[in-house]
Image 1 (cartoon, rainbow, N blue to C red):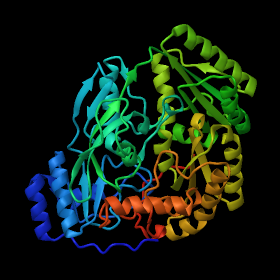
Image 2: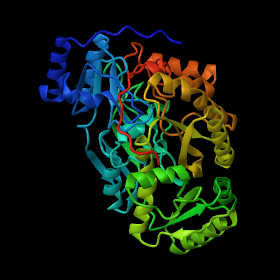
Image 3: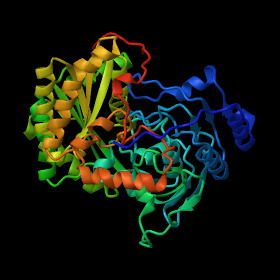
Length: 487
């Protein structure tokens, strides 16, 4: 493990210098307004910065980083704070650098099918803007109404439609970014083909703010599919629902989305939405969506989907036969993450395996949870093998929770990696999963990562404590969250 750098405190002189860069109104000093920069959406973790800054331009980001590098002050880049791996927690205090003011859609180039955006643009806002023009930006995390593109790039975010359309990385053509010492660089332009040198854009995608701060992105767009159909299929048996996933692949169907929710996940959604959900008593349910530009092809795919689901043992296959019913279905699925947070303290294992191994993963998860005597709620993007396993505890003491849950979490990750999978499919490593990185990356791969980090951030000021050198996890402060009744 690398030695943690020695950081300097944020002095009044540094605060004054920051105010000179971004203006006094965009420097948040200690007090109630600073609290929101002390946490993200990962569990109940909490770490307070000494100050937060809200630059409004690339030049201001560069000046802040140059100052921090010179003074050896740690910087935690922050987008919307919706991450689930602790990536936006300022574990070493210092400066939180929020890109929230950099929220402009700079260009939608319909001729070249690209959008140029700043990192503070909310993902759903870009989607709505381009869809009004008949175009499509597919990556759609559950938090798409609040998460931003800068955070999506930092985490290589996914979402339900990645099963057909791919992750954020598949839509990043080029980036503008600022190094840890304040140098601005660009990785390319609007071209689809560009192999001039190393692929720096995709080095930064998924780097979780540890290598550079992204200040502008050129994103690929595609034509918006004209037709979309969605079905909901409850199953009396979890194994049957899991087996339907590879069955759809064997039928040569590529759904645009294929989501799995076990019974406890739907129960959490019902409690959160305060209404009953048809089929909520089923042991597991699938949401399957097909889309395309040819209505006859989409309808044929829909019929075949229904046949495969019925053959796999679905109790019913219910068509969402109106746009409102489609929205209602997706609202159920997208609220589950928020619903789980209300139940108990939890750790979310963002497992991912080859899609054909999802049945084995589900069986292994259930066995691990039962063996260690913990509750778990599983749901996720079954079509691309990405299952969110939430391990729950009602114990209010963080130390007790850690000791109770950690063996189960280790067992769940062991199941995933034994199936050729990974510890995180789309949430990132952050500080939550840093200690588990060696379970899915060998020592030489981690050494290469360290070399890259050392080359780009030799002073170690950018988002320290994330990915490679996580902290003593149970020592991170917690704050209690409001709970509701257990579903």
